[in-house]
Image 1 (cartoon, rainbow, N blue to C red):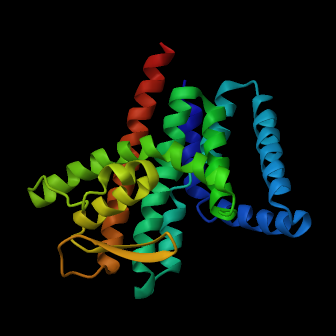
Image 2 (cartoon, rainbow, N blue to C red; image 1 turned 30 degrees about the vertical axis):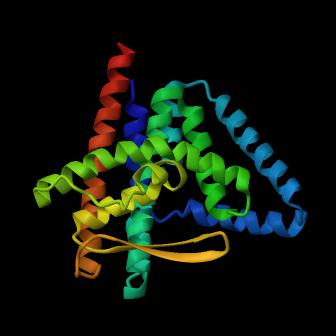
Image 3 (tube, rainbow, N blue to C red; image 1 turned 60 degrees about the horizontal axis):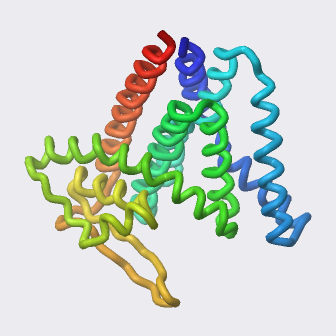
Length: 257
């Protein structure tokens, strides 16, 4: 029991050059040109998701289903490829966000929903996540995506906070009073803030509110983010992925007994 997930994870690593987010972007461009109506685009993505889930439900062999699920939902190995493409200083802060997002949405979240509700829900989260990235003008998808990201982000923060304590010998992280607001409305921001504290760098968050633009700075450091910081954070992320997968497999194995 669970061998399909292991094989699927290994296959996903070998297929790291396959950028499924790019596929969704291309699909969204084509659909947007053809339909040119937000409601019709909503309907298309709903039908598209139901068709994918229905086709997947037809697979009766359990380990084959597990293998295909792991290949489809695990997308963490794409992180390093994206970082290598962004090897310019102006993109370093984007890299932190991309790595954190892929950790949560390309690994922790799908495995959590597979564990709690089954393979179909892991596939469903993958669809919502990638549709939101490619078609972020759809508010319904965005709201569902943020809601489903809350718990995975909190889970991800546990090992990150532990690493921060071990490195800095401190327990305080300055969220500037935004921790609980971030948990609900922008959960990935808390993960990025912890990443910044782990790497002893500042993290800048740009957002708009009531037609006014804001720029927030998290961290009390003078160090700028650089290539060394990114590589170190990638190593941490892969370590967390290994830990999460081991826990996932142990729970799957025990539940099968």
